[in-house]
Length: 469
Ligand code: AMP
Ligand code: ZN
Image (tube, rainbow, N blue to C red; front, side, top):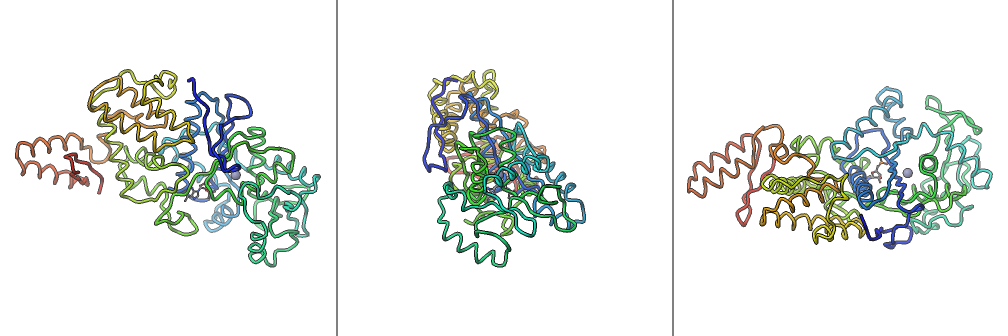
């Protein structure tokens, strides 16, 4: 596709910039993956869905993308949880990593090209720590831990733009009694082994890596540096990504990353959804409450229809609304079968001079502006319904397909799972009954659906939407 340059908001400069990867037409994308100690919640799912959308769109834009999303399979939380459950940490990590892949598939996330696991890169981490030590940026304390010396890296804080003195103040209070650190902001590169904990041999004695060094080592090992695009949610800006920069650039990988992308939170009642606050729904729970055929794509729609840099709020109503929207699209595609569908892999076949396609593309090229791109899809759907043009229906399916939507067979999708009832057909029958003033008949259909757990909602303007109880 002959595309104009993509603009991406770079957290480092706090500006939208023309994206210019290290090698023209190639993108190395590194996303900080899950710590596999439990099922992911719908907030985590938002971040991973955002970067699935980003990787898909970069490919549509003609880039050869290597998408890397690591798995943190060694961490305090994993060790603790495995201990509670009386199983080896590796067993817990393995089962949760598998659950994570299954969860991602339900949201139609494409598997990343590489999913490095931290425990397989311990040598690379130790190599990096060795270089930092030579550069005077790492020191050992008597307990055997190795710390990064923040004072030795003058650019520390450049990503998060935090006031370091304020932070030091806070840290000093929090870390009172912690032994041997030269500066309150210094962080662990290597943690000496405690009895009963997993460990690896090293020049510093048996131990395990700190979280931050894992990503610095895996990103450099798998992609090389500079990494073109590096992402996570905003909570990773500090300290995680700040520390990744300090480690990697302190070891000579300068710049470490060209463009930093951070997604906004998914909130519950205006507060960040998080495991520690206890205000979360696992993705599994959210999917279990929805139709088995429609729920994954509906959740994806809900997660992507807001801009990735705007917070979104979770509610069952908005999720039901997303499912309704999606059914509207599939209904249009069922009524007007698309002309030979262009699959996302053949996005090259999309006619970008079409005004809908052009506006969709311009929105996506402007820092992945999905709200505008979705608005174009809604408009195009209206046009398909009016004109009944198979070509426009094909374009609708193809544009949606670039973001991982409308890929199912319309009939199958609309039928849904569970009830086995074709709800859309029932709604049409009910509308016909109402038109013929057969109100008892119309009511019987409403009751029949209700018994199957399906609630109808008549909207102003005459349309009827439905959701599950
Ligand atoms: P974790 O497994 O806790 O490291 O989280 C995995 C990813 O989910 C990280 O990129 C986090 O920044 C992100 N994340 C955690 N909570 C939320 C939330 N409420 N909304 C969006 N992303 C989140
Ligand atoms: Zn990371």
